Image (cartoon, rainbow, N blue to C red; front, side):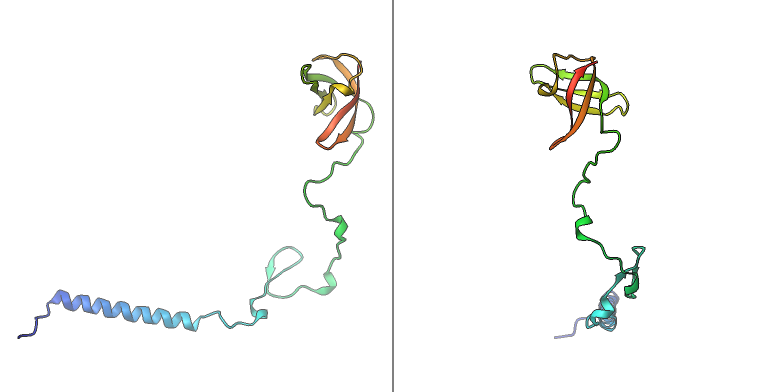
Length: 150
C-alpha cells in the first residue's frame, strides 16, 4: 500500500496548527512569568490618603482623626427644629377630605405642604380657608397642630 500524498493545503493546515500550538505555549509561559500569585500581603495592600485617593504607602499616624461612634448617623438625617418650625405659622388649606378627616395646609412663608388631621382643627374648616397653625414632628413627618381659622 502506498503512502497518501500530501497536498499543499494539508501542509498549510499543519503549519497553522503548529504555529497556534507554539503561540499558545508562549502565552502560557508569559502568564507564568508574570504571575501575581505568591506576593506578600504588603505587596497587595492599598491605602486611602486623607483626600480619598488610592495609594500604596500607608497613611501617616499623626494625621489620624478620631471619630466618635455616636456622631455617625445611619439612615436619613433627623429633622432638627429651626427658626422656621418654631412658633405660629399662617397658611391656606389646599386639600381637605371631610370623609376621611385629613388634608394639607400650604405654609405661606416656605410654601411647603404640611399634613393636618381633623382632630387637630378647632372648628369646621374647608379648602381655601386662611388658617394659623403650629408644627410638630410625628413618626411620619411634620404635622400641623392647633389649627384655627384666621
